[in-house]
Length: 298
Image (cartoon, rainbow, N blue to C red; front, side):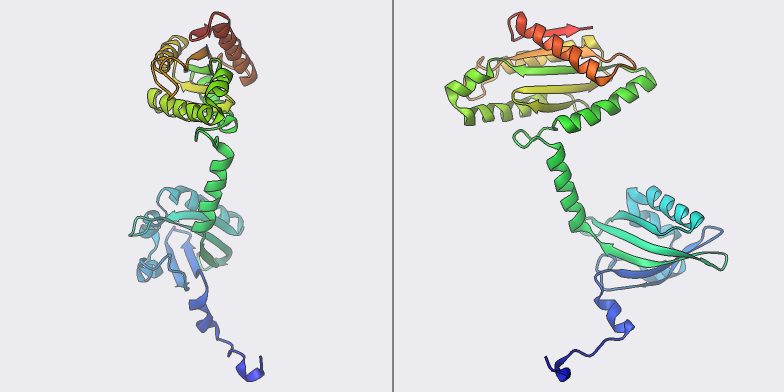
């Protein structure tokens, strides 16, 4: 490319509209008054925003702009102002077409007259967040059944156990195993065996309560975490589930798919390893007494 063919360098004012984001200055006074003295850029994420209003008083607009992320955004602003640290946060921006966009904020603070002035950028990171969510789902979801996997279940169960210990509320779990699943695979083939697993996952989600989490541990084994549920309530729910499954045709004939289920209740302060071991013992008791039944271990 010859010198005469090279593009003419643009001025700063000419470059700003081409930037895939928004350059801004944000001011907050010591009394809490907030505004955007400068807000320009080529990003369309803020195209429907009243920038004139933001330039004079942003206080009433920040909450509707950031929605449920508002408390976290304000905490980030407060932390940055107090310690003069870079402001780094992100929030979900509602838009008129009901398709939310994710906005990343990065700005540096500086003392200003009776307040703090931040100078920085806002970028649309919606595609990045969607990809993060997709990867998170892959990490937490069983690919065959769409149920939570062991990793997600253990994280959830740890949270439920903490709540149970703190508030003194009951927490029970079920360990579920499909009886003679190898025979189903041998007779009908592994593809049909996979279909049984998928149908069972759908059936269990439909029969259990919305607050219960059913997860696939691996193979033909599942676990259900039931918050605010006593051992007796869990036993009743497990038996209802067992009966419904035994009466359902999973494309291999009614009664061909049955479950053995072990149930236990969390003991306050008990390590989760012990809880799961006790539930496993209850499951093996169910298998020992003939399968297609529920055994509990107090």
